Length: 245
Ligand code: IPE
Ligand code: IPE
Ligand code: MG
Image 1 (cartoon, rainbow, N blue to C red):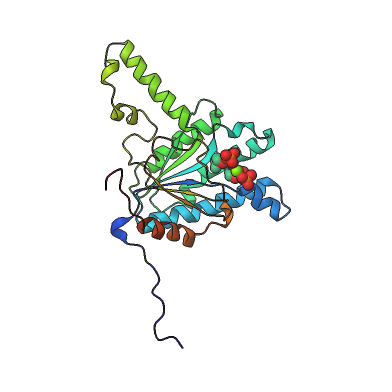
Image 2 (cartoon, helix red, strand yellow):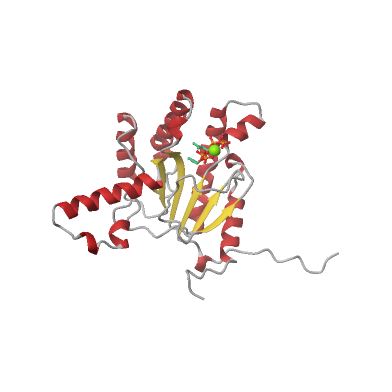
């Protein structure tokens, strides 16, 4: 019998990532493996998400951004897009109930004008009724693209140059940052992607500049709070230099 149990690595609450980004990938493959339609994978993925947000909030993480629908996901079959939109609408509608007592602040990031009027209205409602909370901020990236976000910031700044409010030569990184959907939020320090793919797929191109990347082969619906804790433990074991020595 071993005298000592190997000490399990623990999360240091003083060194949590401030902002976690999650590319929730693999719903379709999860369903396929079970002989189910892709929609079943998306539905299971939405359930997995609830548990992860709760866990991140309990751990004391301040910001989490989850990639729910990219500006490229419109390329999918219409029935799948419609299903994803209905799932997102339900998620937003039920947020008050499912996240009650959890103190989550929900914000949607991405381009809204392509979304249905119903979803746009629901986003406003959900953002409003969670805005009084002071727990974790959950950004739902919905019709989100990193390139669209930066292009949008450039357009705003170009308008200000045209109106003589600022001069082109004086534009700073902070000016760009202030015109992103995540203005006033810290950069992403830990980026998680499930399903074995190791790419950004247009997610938070600006904000992940110095993020630690963590990949797992697990498919999103199988991603559990214990996996999130493992990602944070790995994050805390890394040396971040930000270009220094
Ligand atoms: C992620 O799962 C969910 C969305 C992109 C909306 P996928 O639907 O991309 O699942 P796979 O990658 O096909 O398995
Ligand atoms: C990224 O996953 C988008 C979301 C998770 C919402 P995709 O499945 O769309 O990405 P690719 O096509 O594999 O790059
Ligand atoms: Mg995918």
